[in-house]
Length: 252
Image 1: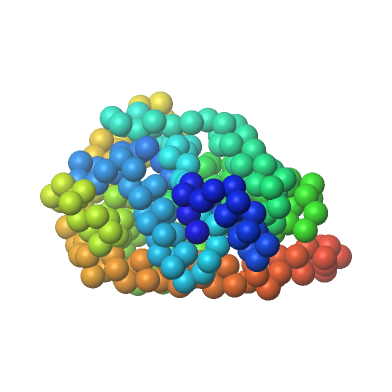
Image 2: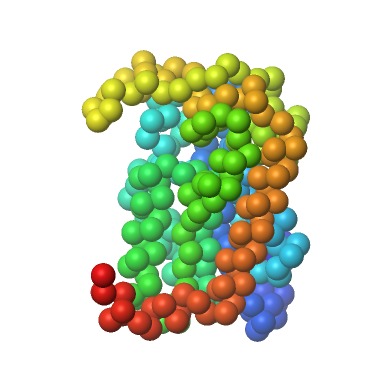
């Protein structure tokens, strides 16, 4: 059920049978010269639109801005600070809780470390502050890394590479503007550098030339299946049962 398309009466009626809401998180971020700036948002939102065809949960409008670090200097990227993301995440979850929702899935199409950490920090706080709440914070690329990697011919494929290009080809082929050469960042780890563009001018991590719409559709199917599984676990109260065992959680 698309949250933005229903009335307050329809919300109240559906709330009687459903306490689960999913928030898609994305970015406005460069994805090479061949993919659109809202690639992360597009993937998260379109995958979840397929999910709600199988499970009748609330799907909120996507949050289009996220924390971008290595790409923040690239043309088109518009990043927010981690504290901004923490505040946004907290506000939407807390106010949704006030409206009667209890199960929250925060699904991010952007897998950046600081971005995901900001969301998880808020979830850790709210799980202690709000009664009878369940929260999932996830990026498909983290929870399905093995399964999605098996679809790729490119070892270590990542940002704007084979997989993301394949998924956009399957979702919105008209938004794929040709292709791009294989490329990888050359940051001098463990240094944090000021000039990001010097070490990653093309903004690609992988080989977009290996992308196909068939690989993209296979990835979409895998992600949809996993999200549906997680929704079922929320409905079963799996998170609450774990929360009620604080002593066992302290054991090695």
